[in-house]
Every structure is written in structure tokens, then in C-alpha cells.
Amino acid sequence: MFHLIDNDRGVTQTFNFRSLLMEDYKELKLQASKYKISIKEFLVVRHPYAFEANGKIIAKYGGISDIISGVTQGKVKLGYGYPIEYWDSSKNRLSSEAWADFGSIGFMNDQEVIGMLNDIFPRFTQDAYKILKGLNT
Image (cartoon, rainbow, N blue to C red; front, side, top):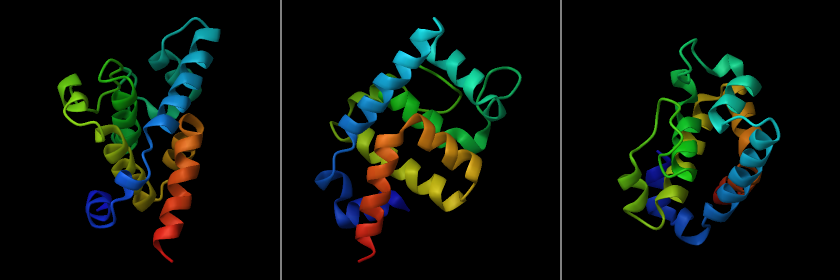
């Protein structure tokens, strides 16, 4: 649905979320490095409810996994996401997919998933909410 909104309203053409997502990712990397663990290990420790025993993220958190895949260009795999080539195929791909995942997560309205998205990508989430609110006016 949010891909359609993006195509219709040009959301990610007007508001490129890439820089916000990368700032959030930089902070995530910093937090993980303080404990000398990988990003995946950090996320499992910080959000254990979101992962299966084998370390794969639970399906309802797939949108977050997708965004992680995008900011790492497919290098961090949580169970959902796209291959490296997908992220390289378009300059706007990360913004577009993050916007669509934001919409899917919001539509699901699961407070645990929304909370995890806010925790990992606070800058992106804050701006995405502002833009969504602006589309309604």
C-alpha cells in the first residue's frame, strides 16, 4: 500500500529517508560495538522476543529485518530482506522500501513491532510519522 502512496504522492522523491536511516544505523553499530558484539547479536539481546531460538527474526518483524538488510546492503541477515544486488539497483531503493515497511508495520498496529522500529530507527520513524500526518492534510 505504501509503495502505491509513494508512487502517487512522490513521498520518497521529496523526502529521502536514506540519511536518517544511515544515522540510525551508525548509532546501532556504535551501541553494538560497545559490547563487542555484532549487530545481530545486539538485537537478539536487546529484543529477544523478536527472535526464534535459531536466531531468525519472527515473521511479524520482517519489515525491520528488511530495513536492516537495506542499511547494511544485505550484509546483516535476520531472516528477511533482499540480496545485495537489489539494494544497488536504485539510488532511492532504501528510502522506498523503508517507507513501505513503515507503512506495513503501522498497518499491522502491533505495539511490540512499532516499539522495536522506534528503538532501532528513531530518526527515520519520527520523520516518517510527520510526513504521513502531512499527507492527510
